[in-house]
Length: 429
Image (cartoon, rainbow, N blue to C red; front, side, top):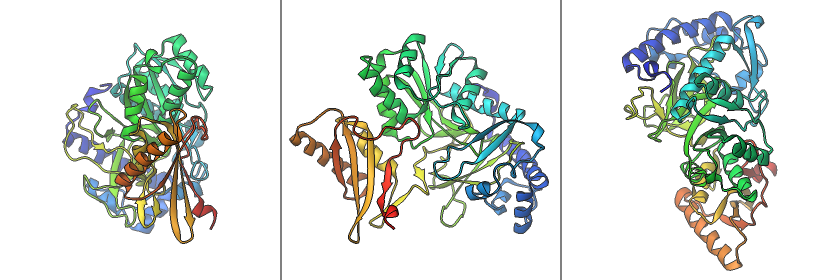
């Protein structure tokens, strides 16, 4: 553990600390952010709460709220107090801008160090970060956390996949971070260069920024022969660093001394109990530069009941199943892209790159799943694999789909977040 005293803080003391910090941040937001003063007054809520449960009375903050107030109207301090700016990747609309004070950066480095230490990073590691260094938060979060632990940082930045592999070999990289689909892409690139990924020195990895199924994790572990951890975060909170999974690999510990978590019904907004699946709502407890109250993440998960065997007392949430706004309704059935990925990656005859195309034929919805084969197959072999995938997808989703196994390297490649779904129903409206 990076900070055992805080990571193992007894539940009673942790909740006392949460209430103290929550009361302070609600007052800070009310007094210094006109948006929140107006929202709180309209809802008739008082920031001087007496219990954590009272937070349910406060209004939600949405991404649209943030966009309407961009770039600087959500800031709680004078501009001269800020030292760094980051923005969301903007994949679902205009990017959301977040500004950090020096203290905000210190908090970010602290939670990232906890996550990285949980994933096995030590000061003895050579830590390669193949993520874009720019307004996107990813690389900087891993960089700050890795520095705080004392690892040797290799800031290789975006893309140039062959160069990434050459530098891994040259420097003897032992730990990598980034996007799960890119880790699988790098494994394929290494093999094309005549290098077996498992023969490199990389023995630990931590990945996030997109849906990350158990099947994806297992395949990365097999291809690289390394331990793999899942990290969760979002620009609106700090970037990566909100939570990660311990060596139990059964849910992600969320740092409750810095973030207060709720699960709600995404349709009604009603708060749900532990073990009930819904949308994750987060409140920053220590973010002085841009406090965020009851932020609707749109990420679907649930909170585990009970404590973890690893000794950490902070709650765990399940791996993110998908986003409520990524959920597709096909033939009246709710389906997440992560369910398709789970089915695909169970099959060792296909590669890691796939695409789902949703369309309409007459009045009926149709799904075509294209997936790259691991090699060129005969017509007979290809049809057999397609049937195996059709059956597995139907077991997981209950839906009948068409599957097409295509040749290796024939589908579009993505070095950032993978774009897996094309919904032609929307394009044709």
